Length: 108
Image 1 (spheres, rainbow, N blue to C red):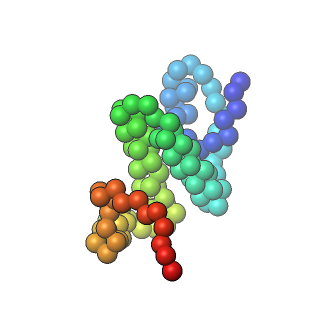
Image 2: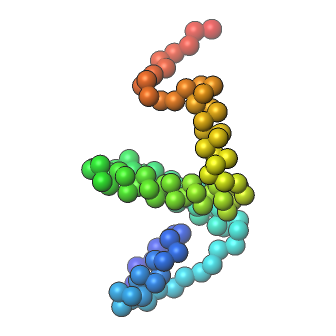
């Protein structure tokens, strides 16, 4: 039986069982939950970087967005509205990334 030892979406155990298989799960304490969420973000970033098609890339970005929603709400006790305000304020002060500016060096 394969061992995964990773955070999965809430309905994955039900999906596994509906396919005729069985699985073992644990419920994480808050500190471990935060650690596993951070590991999951890195996993999804790697999967996004390896995506070969637009559809695959968008799937991975959707996974990242789900993790961001979870981190904002469950870990940082905040809202997507507050996060969007912070993003918007930073974009207004520093700009976005649309102009594709690549900083080479800065002289003292």
